Amino acid sequence: MASRVLDRSAAEVEIDPRIAARRDEVESEKRRRRGRWWLVAAIVAAVLVGAWFLTRTSLLDVDRIKVDGATVTTAEDIIAASGIHPGEALLEVDAAASASHIRQLPYIASAAIVRNWNGLIAITVTERVPVALAASADGVAMLIDGSGRVIGPHVAGDGVETVLIGVEAGSPGTSVLGVPGALDVASLLTPGMRARVAGIATAPDGSLNLALIPQGIVIMGPPTDLRAKVDSLRIVMGQVDQRDLASINVVNPTTPVVVRTPK
Image (cartoon, rainbow, N blue to C red; front, side, top):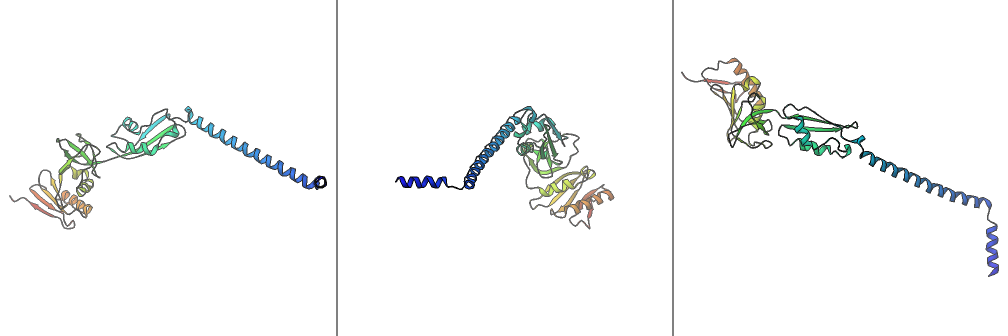
C-alpha cells in the first residue's frame, strides 16, 4: 500500500514542467474567458437599462404633432382620432393603429403616420372627394364619394349637385350599395356637365339614365364603356342646342342619337 502511494507521488513529481505550464495557461484562459463574458453581460444589461430609462425621459417624448393634406377635416379632429398626445413616449406610439383610427373619420380616405426622433409626429392624410348626393331616411342630402362612402351632409357651395336617384344614404361612414356604375359616371362628369346633370338613376338590370337640367334624359344603357359614353355626352352637350331636348342616347358612344320633344 505504502509502495503504491510513493509510486504515485513520484509520478507527480516527474510531470514535465511544460505540461504543467500548459495546464496553468489553460486554466488562466478559462478564467479570463469567464471574466470577459461577465463583463459583456454587465455592459449589455447596463445598456438595456439605460435605454429603458431613456425612453421614459422627455428626450424621447412626443413634442409636436403636424397634420398635412386635410382641407375639410380639422387638424384637431384628426389628432383626436389618432389618440396620440404630446408628452407620450415616442416609442410607445402605435402608428399603424393610430392611422387606422384616423381612417374611420368620414372624409378620410388614407392616413400615414411617421415618428421622428426630434419628437415630431407627422400625420399625412388624403381626403375623399364627393361626387354625388343621396337623401337620408329623414330627407337630408348626404355627400357620397366615388367608392360609395357617405361623407357627411351636403352644404351649399360644395360643388356637388348630382343626385343618385332612388338611393337612400345612411349615416356618415357607411356606404351606399348597388350603384357602382352611377358612381363611376358621377366621378367622370366634368364640372360643366355636373351643372347640367340633375340625377343618375340605376335600373334593376344596372342600366343607367341621367336626368338633365332643364329637361331631357341621357340613355347610357349598361354600365360598360362609361368613359367613352361620358366623353360622347360631353361633346354632344357642347355642340347641340339643348332647347326642346327629349333625350340623348349614348348607348353606342360613337354614334350618339339626339331626340327632341315634338312641338
